[in-house]
Every structure is written in C-alpha cells, then in structure tokens.
Amino acid sequence: MANTEDTVVYALGPNCGIEDVEEGKIYAGTVQGFANFGTFVQLSARLKGLVHKSNILQSHEEKDQIFVKIVNIRNNGNIDLAEMIPEVFRLETITRRAHVTKLGEIQSRVGRNVTFEAEVAQIKQTSGPTIFTLVDESGSGNAAAFVEAGVRAYPEVELGGVVCVSGEVMRRQNQLQIEVSSMEALTGDDAKTVHDRIEAALDARAEPEDVPLLVESDVLTQLQPQMKKVAKLIRRAVFEAQPIILRHHADADGICAAAAVEQAVISLMREEGDDLDTAYYLFKRSPSKAPFYEVEDITRDLDFALKDHERFGQKMPLIVLMDNGSTEEDLPSMKMAQVYDLSMIVVDHHHPDAIVDEYVIAHVNPYHVGGDFGVTAGMLGTEVARLINPKVSDLIRHLPAVAGVGDRSEAQERQRYLDLVADEYSEDACKDIALALDYEQFWLRFNDGRELVKDILNLKGNRALQTRYVSLLVEQANEAIEDQMAASMPHVTEEILPNGAHLFRIDVEIFAHRFTFPPPGKTSGEIHDRLCRQHPGEPVVTLGFGPDFAVLRSRGVLMNIPKMVRELREEINGGGISGGGHLVVGSIKFVEGMREAALAGLVEKIGLADVENRA
Image (cartoon, rainbow, N blue to C red):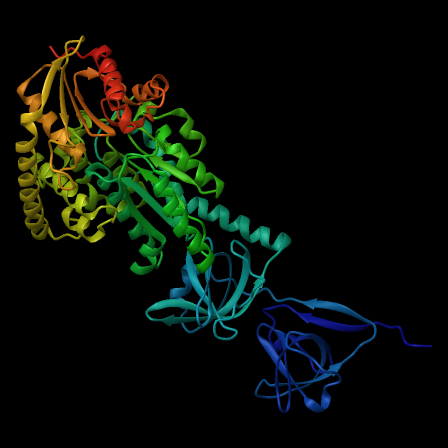
C-alpha cells in the first residue's frame, strides 16, 4: 500500500533569507535561468540556489514552478539543490515581517537594502529598466526594476496598485532611486491595510496650515474654507505624484493668480525631492485666450494627458482653472473632462452659473459669499498659494496688488494689497508690471513664458533685471497703445441711451491696427478709460466691435452681460450668439451676417439697464 503521509513543501515569503531555510527540507521555487552546469532557482526575493544538471529530473522553462530539496548550504552562502517531484504534499508558507522603511527616509539609507510598502503612481518603461514611481504616507520615490533592456518588469503590478518592494537605495544622476530586488503586488486585506494607512496619512499631510490672510477682507475670510479645500486637493495631488494642469486667462490678473500657485506647487514638489525637470513634467501652466475653458483647451490637454498616460504610465491629471471656469461657456469642456473622470477645480471671479458646480470638486468665487469681481483671481490665487506652501508668501505677496490694478478692481481689497507692498512697489509700479504682463503675453500667444513671467514679477529675486525689463516693455506697450489710439479715437461715435448713459462705439476691425498690440479687447478698454476721464461722474459704456464680435466696457451702468448674452441667444434666431465675462465687462460673439441685429439688441438692453447714482 502506497504511503499517503503528506510531504511538507515550504514556500518562502519575499523577505525570507538564508537563515530561514534548512538542509534536507523541500521548498517551492521558480526557475530563474539556465547554465551549462545546471538550473538557477529563485526561492524568495532574497534567496536563490543551483540545481546541478545531474539532479534535474525533468525539462523546464523560465518561470516554471519547481520543487527542490536543499542538499547543502555552503559557507559562502551558495545553496546546492536537487529537484524533487512529490506525489502528495502539504504546502506551508514561511513568512518574515521585514522592517518597513518609509520613502521619506531613504536619503539616510543610501547603499542599504530597504523594504517599503507603497502605491504605484506611475509606471514608465524605458529602453532599459522599468521605472515605478511609488507613493507612501511619507513621500514619493522612483524604483528601477530590470529584467532585460526595454522589457516590462513585474507586469502583474498595475497603476494604482499596492506593492511591497525590497531593494538597495542608490544615487543615480544625483537622484535617489531604489534598485529593486523584489516587488510583490499585494492583494486582499494586505493591500487594503496598506492603502487605508497611506490614505489616512496623506489626507493628514495634505491638510493646509492655518495661514492668516495677507489683508483684512470679509469676502476672503468667508472664502477661506473653500480656499483651504482647493489647497488641500492640490497638495494631495503633489504628494500622490498626480500631474496638475493649470489653465488661466491670458491677462495680468490670470497670470498673477497662476504664477502664485505655480511657485507654491513647484517649491512643494522640490521639498518632496523632485528636481526641476520632474516638477515641471508633473505641473503644466497654460494660458487660455478666452476668459473660459474652451473646447480647444480641453482637447489639447486631453491629448497630452492621454499620451502621457499610455506612454509613461502616468496618472490622469487634476485640472485647475484660474480666472476662468465659472460660467456656462465652460460646460462643453467640463463635459469632455467628465467623460475621462478628470477632477476639476475652479478659482475665479467671473459671475458664476450654478450648473458649473455639478462638474467641479471645488469652486472658489467671491460671488458665492456676497462679493463680486473686484476681488480678483490674482488675489484669490495668491491666498490659495500661501495655503499650498506658506514658504512662498514673501515671494508672491505683491501679486494681488498687480492683479488688482491690472484688472481695474474697485474693491477695498485692492487698496489694502497696495498698502501691503507700498514699501517695495508703488501703485504706478504695479500698473507698469500689469501692463508689461499683458504686452508680453500678447506676443507669447499660447505659450506660458514661464521664465519671462518670473522676471517681470520678480520671482527670481533680481529686482534690477525686473526694473529694466518692465521699463522696456512698458515703453513699447505705451508706444503701441498711443499709435492705436491715434488711429481709433477719431472714429468713435457717441449716442445717449434712454437711461441717460453715454454709449460710445468703435469698429475696431476697420479703425484699428490688426494683429498687433493692443488687441481688440484692450483697445476698447483704453478707449473706454479715456472717455471716462472726459466724462467724470457720468455713466459711460464703450462698445468695440468687429465683423462677428463685440467687446463691452461699462462704468456706472449696471448691466449683467452673461444674462444679456443668454437672452439675445434666445431672441435672435440664427444669430449664433455666445459670450460672457463679468457683469459690466465682457464680450459677445455672433455670426457675421447677423451683426446689425446682434448689436441693435445689445444696445437696446444696455439702454434699459439701471444707472448707478455716483453723486
């Protein structure tokens, strides 16, 4: 009668070493490779041995399971094995709980073997090793695993999965990297335990400090909870190595808002150990021509994000909209983002449409707490940036003043921010910086001009260079403005509306230089400023128009441009009406053949608007 007593076969956990095995016992292993003299067998991530060819009982291929008995453990640590084929056996697992190192501690572990548990934030296949970007509760880091050149290591490990990794901490090109000796994809309760631990710790790390506002402001005080929420979401993205795309309106206010957040995010990434190349790879700032997130913008962003996701195993990005994102005009892009489950944040001061909040995870807007567009995006962005990383406060504290004068804010906050930096920047100096930003961005078109913007805003600490460069840009901008005004002002027409307001019209398509600075919107704004000075204390509306667009500027006429646009869209059949902006500053588009009807309807609504009493 055959002996049915179980043979015990031991399976070693990934952290088991030579101290966990004994001669004469049988172990489960994996065929690692072949040589003329025998077969190499991996017993654990840290342990392997050799089956001499005389002790091989059957043919094998790489990665086959094999059962082996330990014949001899030599003094030098080499292990001699013999293949076994047990008919009946009982499998027992030997595990060893290794000391788990945190990724935030690896700087002190160079040259040493470590084990850590983390989530996979990115998987990038190079022409050599596979690079895994890993995140735990303390930080992030890269782990390099090599099978053979260009071949994906550990294909069972997925983006977003939880792993246990062992390897040696090395310094490559001045960057720390773990050279992987083993990587195990955790599952079930093991994965959940690690995931929950990392989640809780990251959530706590992402919580912003309680940073006081730079100035007193009832509106900003009421917005602090939402600003902290936005800052926490952005900090969390940084800690999780999630890419961030920041889109902003391409004017001085939008640039100041975005530049402030850029400084905070990049500095936080560098504190996490990223070099500048990595930081700017994970953070992209892009201007949007219109004061809303256009379909062209989201299409471009999705294209790059999907390519990076497929090519580099990168997470899909968090999208942050600044000085845009609050209105119905943003919805087509938001719906496209929703298809790909992209999270979106809005920090804006345009009059908001409630439906937008169905598509965003956080929305900072002064109108939500009884404020208005006078609290500019640059003010909001700077306060958010200080919550993201308080260390940048001194570097960016002048940006709200530049944004306030650049956006012609009349809110109390404008003067308070100007007073804050009066020892360093006068109001005229802030106006010059804002004009320099507008002028430079016009020539940059859709490029971010990152380093040029830093110089204009003195974010590199070179005040002498800032002064020289801003002075030159302002000189060129003012020459261009004067040239434009000389061509345009003689062609301005005037009429008095039923509500007593002065309406001034100018066809900026045929009575202004095209394709140069200032563009139609700023040309209309410059004309409006001059006309307001000519009619102090009186209600003034300036209407600059072209074949298929109109730009509005108002002082003392209480319009609601987004509401007017929606009404005209319904009233003028075939007009192709769209547009928006602030309540009293904005633009409208229409089809060229319906220009007269669109302008007539617009002027009629302006004439019915209430007029502010400025006595």
